[in-house]
Amino acid sequence: MPNVGDVIQGRYVLRAKLDSGAMADLYLANDLRLNRQVALKVLSPELAGDAGAVDRFRREAESAGALVHPNIVTVYDWGRVDDTAFLVMQYVAGADLRKLLRERGPLAESEALRLAADVAAALEVAHSHGIVHRDVKPRNVLVDANGTALLADFGIAAPTDERAEPEAVYATALYVSPEQAQGWPVDGRGDLYSLGAMLYELLTGQPPFRGDTPEAIARQHVHAAVVAPRRLRPQLSAATERIVLRALEKHPSRRFANAGEMRRALLGAAAQPKRSSPHPWSWTAPRRWWNWRVARPSSWTAPRSWNWAAPRSWIWVVAAAPLMLLLVVGAPRLATARQASVPRLAGQTVDAARHAAAQAGLTLELQELPTQDTPAGVIVSQDPQADAHAPAGATVHAQVSSGVTVPDITGQPCASARAAQATAGWSVKPARWRIANIIEFGRIVAQDPAPGSVVPSKGQIAVQVAGPVGPC
Image (cartoon, rainbow, N blue to C red; front, side, top):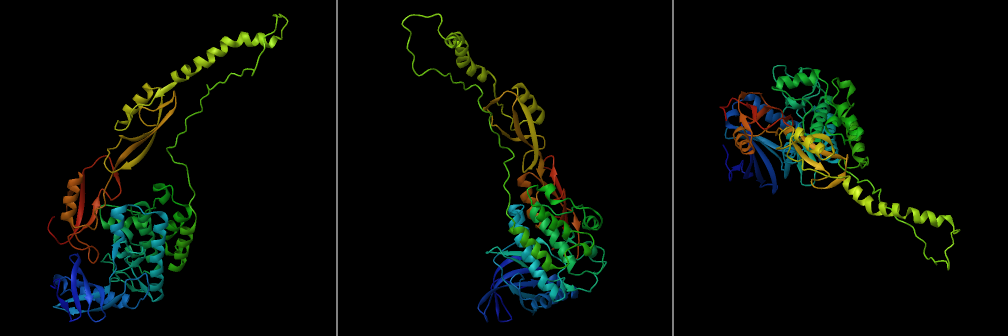
């Protein structure tokens, strides 16, 4: 197995190890001949004798090597060394979309649309060469320092007329098209479905379908209706939702005709201006109805002698003076008496919060939202804030936790994910699973509860691990 510092075929100097998995190790290397940085993928020694794995390297070199485009990771070379195979590729200084999703959660709508448009541009070039990628997913999309998306890993790409092998699930189940899941012939529209599934996750933070096993997820891609994105993220535009739902049509004929058409739709939606909407928790205090002002004449000269026949208007002024005084002095006190002190509701259960609001003469309006740490049924925030004054009978808006959001640990090494989640208050229960040619051995393939789902409180996450490996 090569090590950092080794020189491959007298040309590629391994400078640093970027990633490691059961199928291959990825290195940063220097190309001595062309004086440039490259990424070098070396097939694991355990798979060096596997003709299928070596053939995958060859296919990736042949497929991606024929494609030159700013949105495609270029493959420069491939060969064999020390009884194993290697690929030399363009080095992209950045992160893949899976890592970005883990770090940032759902992306801004315009950013997600732009990245998807980049991938569509890459697919347009591949499809024009008769190549279907078959494994479009966040892990296979790299984002460089300029924010440009590049499609990588053409290892399972195939001609458009080739039928998927029924005994092997090639694409990651979370993004697989219905026709590919059933082993039917796949053309470029299958890639557009996978791009739609990936865009769904970029926008909502969760894939369109989830399940306990890859087979259960694949069945949903074939038979289940997808939840509209705006039900999970209401502020998305209608144009964006239409693009996602069209890409996720079950029958290929109902999707975009080609990647170019989908790319134009994505760019059009990204260019649409966003309408601003009022903050859902804004509250404006009512005007003070008691701000009376008594008018008085600017000057007044007493008559030389009192005349009982004086204008009657002055008699009414004198008679009304006590009432005016009562209104000026008493009204503010009356208004103060009608003001309620807002109780502290954050941290209380819904029942306790309702009781506290009722005791203060206020009504309570709730909105549920998932949180990272607060158990279900507990108030997270309120408006107006505690100890503020509000009119008696006014409404206090409060956000209540609908539960805690389950973290996404798929794709992570099982052992490190288990340790990290234990610190965060979750327990990870591992199991064995194997899916050929998809997930690197030792990494988490699926989890239950699913990533992004909401549960009442932190607890156990059952995971399936790509194998054969021992429990982590």
